[in-house]
Image (cartoon, rainbow, N blue to C red; front, side, top):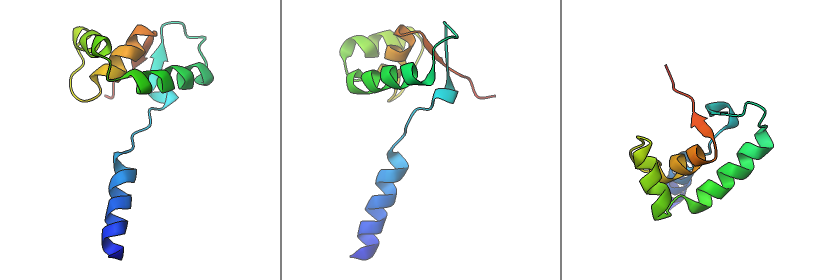
Length: 83
């Protein structure tokens, strides 16, 4: 029983993906972390809106985070590329 509870906990913690301020840049470089967190919270709540998913696809995003990334892009945030 304990093994099952531990497995579920690890699964939930591993799947929880918080976006970080350091992973994004803003077209207006004066935006601070507080504004990022507000925009990120709003986009997380609205990521399943059809309009954000469509915009995300038009911006070239694919996968499960399309709506979130589309919303962030509309707010001026770009995800940094990992090279």
